[in-house]
Image 1 (cartoon, helix red, strand yellow):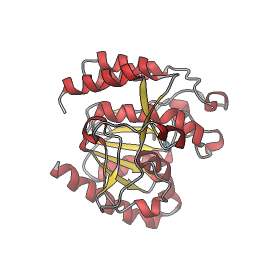
Image 2 (tube, protein in one colour; image 1 turned 135 degrees about the horizontal axis):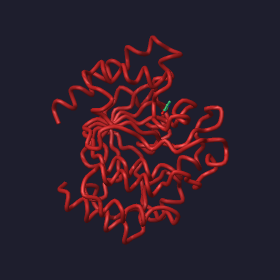
Image 3 (cartoon, rainbow, N blue to C red; image 1 turned 135 degrees about the vertical axis):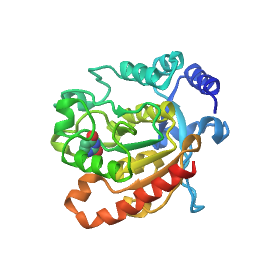
Length: 262
Ligand code: URA
């Protein structure tokens, strides 16, 4: 898709007030009638099985504005900056804002990365420094990235929820539903060739499924705009279960192949 087509896509979305996608059943009342190539709201596993279709809905609080600023951006870096500004430094859209988070952790890396990693949500270190994946799990992720001859500066790293859940609890469905449109927009802007979903929450959110990560990993899914999606185990899980590093290494070799063939 050319830059002009992307601009058209965002303009169209802004005009409709479309902000993102969700697996919330309430969204299924208006299924996007456009072909997958233009709205790209489907994730389909290569295995031939069909993942849950997503539907499109209007999000009153965020988005037309957000889509409009993104449209005006001249390049992915500007578009990400516009999106970050739209979220705002003190986002109050969900209850995580009032449960002790210090700051929004937007994401970091190469705005035009071929490879993007998506985690669950910031932990204590990330909340303090405003940067994703810099604690113990983050240091392991850095090693995983370096194991495929890349650096953190080559890739883009973001999370499903941008604010730290208290006591590092799991993000709740309403928090994910509120924040996921921003992740989807980050992916639309960056247009990576491969997205690695780190753990259950990233994989389930991006694939709009409730399947467990154990069933999702080891497979490659077609994602929006021609990207491939590779679910793998979360680095925090690997810290507790080091023997699973072998499977993650298999997944990373697959990622290398996908990048080489794209
Ligand atoms: N775990 C995540 O999922 N994301 C982070 O940014 C840090 C730890």
